[in-house]
Length: 160
Image 1 (cartoon, rainbow, N blue to C red):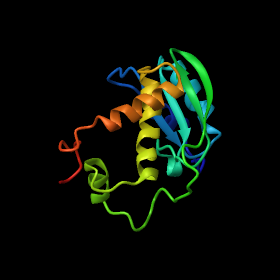
Image 2: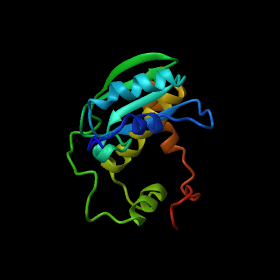
Image 3: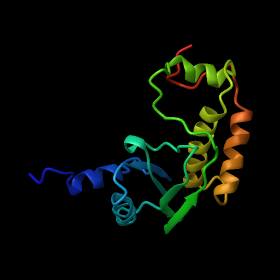
Image 4: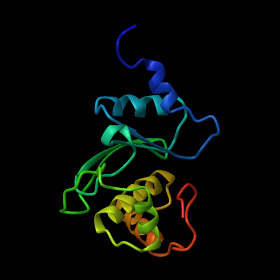
């Protein structure tokens, strides 16, 4: 009717039917970050991390400074995460193959940019989960978890 996203789209993005303790959301339009935060608060969400992701995904580009919005312990937050790498690369590399994620996980390939994308995104989720006090500690925890991963056990959905 309006030719654009309706308010129900925003409500559905923060719906939490199973009562998860934390949510992460990527938004494409920066103006929706505050709306997502406010809607999450109204719906009783206490831990919600929102970033402007490429295409609206919750994915941290390691070569860019990003603004984070949301709620931590019910309090509104507005944080800045610094770039993790100087290298610039498109996130959706047309030459990338699905098996590259498996190869990155097992250590068959060593790609510092891809690793920073994984650990940087994980750090934001860990922050939302309140697994670490503050962004720097969440980044250190994500890096430690990555280093300690079982390279032989592939996470669900990654074909061998």
